[in-house]
Image 1: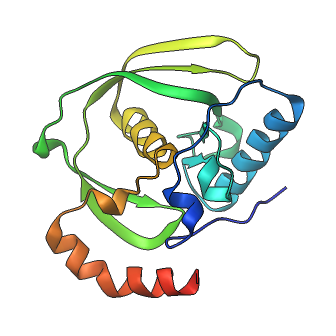
Image 2 (image 1 turned 60 degrees about the vertical axis):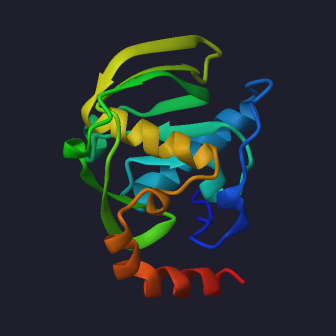
Length: 172
């Protein structure tokens, strides 16, 4: 089922998400609906606050081709270690909840993650790099009420100020 996306200005995007106490069939179904919504919107990651849910749930899939998809469902994801925070490693990011805005964001180049998958197994991924690390950090920011536009340069903020203002007004 395709879910309604919250966009910039929605209070749901600014709340700190609560841990998932138990992985239920309903939460796994929600994660699958999030994946479907993310695919429909041509995204590679989505966090529960983006659909108005205040829980620590993220879905990701870096594969664009339907027959090559490798979805990842992360309950209660945490960054154990982030290394290589270097402004040279700035790359352009966008967000399904902040449509039509792309800007460079500096992020660590390598992370160690832990999360619980949909089967209830604890997963520890070390030395996650590249697009997967960037996507994970972007989505985990959502769980803490942080948007990528909070991390962009003052010049990019100024350049996108009118778009952001229009989006925020649409949420009132």
